[in-house]
Amino acid sequence: METQRWTVSELTRYLREQFESDPRLQDTEVEGEVSDFRIPGSGHAYFTLKDADATLQCVMWRSQLLAHRGDLPKHGDRVIAEGYISIYEPRGQYQLYCRRLRPAGRGDLHAEFERLKEKLAAEGLFDAERKRPVPVSPAVIGIVTSPSTAALQDVLNVLRRRRPQVRVVLSPTPVQGESAPPQIIRALEALNTQADVEVILLVRGGGSIEDLWCFNDEDLARAVAASRIPVIAGVGHEIDFTLVDFAADLRAPTPSAAAELATPITADHLRADVQRLSQRLFNAAALRTAEQRRAYEQAMYALRRLSPRAAIDNARQQVDGLVSRATRAVQSRFALRRSELAGLKRALKSMSPMETLARGYAIVQGPDGLVLHDPAQVRPGDRLHIRLEKGPLRATVDEEQDGIP
Amino acid sequence: MTDNSLTFEDALAQLNRIVERLETGELSLDETLALYEQGQELAKFCEDALTQAELRLEALRPVPGGGYERVPIVDEDPDA
Image (cartoon, rainbow over all chains, first blue to last red; front, side, top):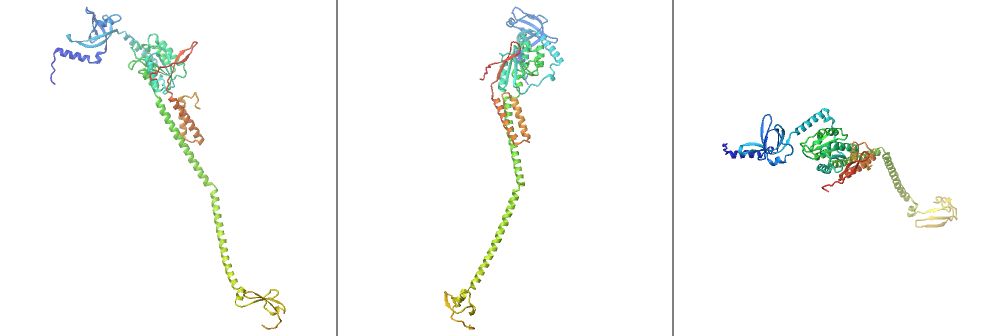
């Protein structure tokens, strides 16, 4: 790589641009001990911040100094300087351009926070075993916050979107200032008198660390831990941690997130659940009725098999068979007889005397109607009846003749 | 059965029990039909409850002499 050659100005400007394009150096806070604080005739303040191992040159313009409230720092004071880092080109010197100065007294606040946190932690107030599970599908949700805040609207919007069927009970309280903690405690206690409230959202929108400070109140932290109803804390932003966050059963990074944690099951989930259950209900009922129909059909089948009807039908059929066989037998016997009879009739007919008469013979009957075989059967004067082929003939016996054929 | 005091959660739990009973079987036809009808009523109750989309908002107010009462808040819904 070719060696870069700079003029001093170019290099210095380049370096200044490097500083000024780094966001971490443009919006920054530096804590340190003030030394050599001076305000020359220009009205701008110049000073040095240092700690054990390093020093940092600082400048604060007159306009910012005029906006400064409180005492100006003295040599040896610990301060937090807010501002940006850049380079003063004429002297090739990087420095902090200070916009705001405040005593590092907040360091004491922080120390107090750490002390309380350790104390309460040692008492077990923050122990995981103490945390109560928050309900997954609460019907009534309590909210502790200030009524006129964006945080409340955020929470309500989330609830409206996820679970509009919930009932929300607001326990109003200021959430800022020194007098806030006892009022927040009372608001919590008020909700704890409501039997149907299943979970409490203790929320507050973002603000400065001082704004959120009331949520580091020891008594409030204890009240949160003592709440009969589980508490979800959503105070400030993601990065803000307060004692209330540690004492709560669940910590949410923001008020909206607290509302989401209070409604892990949304109305859409529930609708899907109900639809699934309806489908299962229908399937199970259909299956049961199909089983019962099958059982019924099996029983009917068994019943039919056991029924005497089949035997009766069977017997009836046998009887029918026998009857028709008998009928057939009788009928054929009759037919036989009929043909015998016809034969006899024919034989009889061939033996009829009429046949004989046709051949010229005659039949003679006496007065008593008897056929005459012997003249002795009649006496003279007896009337005879002679049957010829074509008709009868009457005659009278003349005389007796013996032995004359 | 689906009286006013029935909550959505109770109805859903009851529906769940009915479905499980139906699924485990060993029921007469009468029982099956009765459970099915009951289950349908509960499912309808649940669906109706879910169509209700108006968030109910109340504020606690101390009552003179102790205790608290709930006062409905008419909330200006930005979407409404």
